[in-house]
Amino acid sequence: MKVVIADIVRTPWGKPCGSMEKFISSDISAPILKKMLERNGVDPLAVDQVVFGQSMPTTMPNNIGHYAWLKAELPVDVPGYTVQSVAGSALQALRNCYYLIATGNEGVCVAGGADSYSAAPFVMRDVRNHFYPEHRGVIDTLDEAECCTQPEPMTRMEQYKNAHGEELTDAQKAFAAESRAKAEKFAEVCGDDVVSLSYTDRKKGEIVISKDEWIGTEAEGALAPYADGAAVALLASEEKAAELGLTAKAEVLGFAVAGCSPVAQQTAGAAAAAKLLKNKGLTVEDIACMEIIENSAADVLETVEALGFKGKVNPLGGALAYGKCDGAEGIFMLMRLAASLEEGQYGVACTYTAGGQGMAVLIKK
Image 1 (cartoon, rainbow, N blue to C red):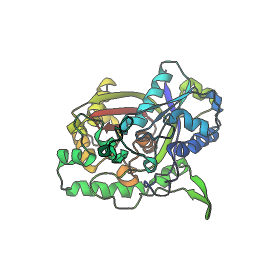
Image 2: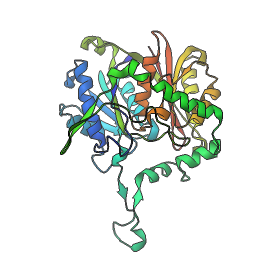
Image 3: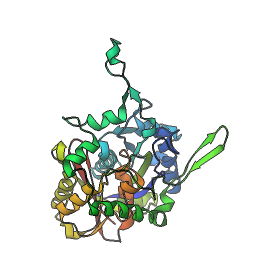
Image 4: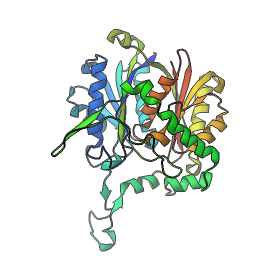
């Protein structure tokens, strides 16, 4: 059964503790869920399932896949759940929805993803039964999360230095600068797909957030900075899309996953993409455009070289420009990919995650 993407919308991407610091993940997600259904004229009761990705769960409702839907005051009849696959969380949510529809179990699904690094909690470990003085230290869960998804604790920067060294090459610097320049074109192509957020300040009145905070700035160091944000996609079977009067942006043709050494986790994205193309009987020459997660410029350039890819890469910029929102990154990548393809062209989005796992998706415009 054919599965199509009818729509993708997102919030602005915000700096942690920046303009969106007052929002938890469900606050960010609820408005775009409602907006996407409204602008497509879809009755919320037509949605069979909601699946959300979240990389950085908080102590405030952890099943964002259902809670964000309820927070948007949408029908309680529609079930939802949450998946966690670090930077692959959003693509995993999309993958789950794809298989639910492709197997004929559901007709319409919403795949989403969100993270609020601003709301990431601090914790104290090993104090439930014995509050010893040596256990009274406070742990930043952002720091802890970087190290706890692999056998040998390793931060993003430690992994990067092990893989690429400490010095940025001219090619890496040029790629990062180019990413920021490309991102400036996003508003021209997909500006209508960004949903503003707002809240009321006691002194200043209504505060509206409508722009990405990272665009045009110089990101520090080799790694993409974290960002708060959310993105959602509306998926349907071809038959259900026709019934609801939806226009397909692209067809989802399949997924592939791969594993690799946690020490060289950046190689898993290329492995997943290569596996996907082989499974579908395609070569890199058949692919017009690729979206590759921009954890760093070095990782993207290594992936391109490993695949021998010659087409367009991240033509509307990536996380080095916008910031990296792991819980939603894959769906934002898919938004840019679909917008960058011409009718009939194939595109691939691939990501990798801490611990050495890769995932890739193939779409056709």
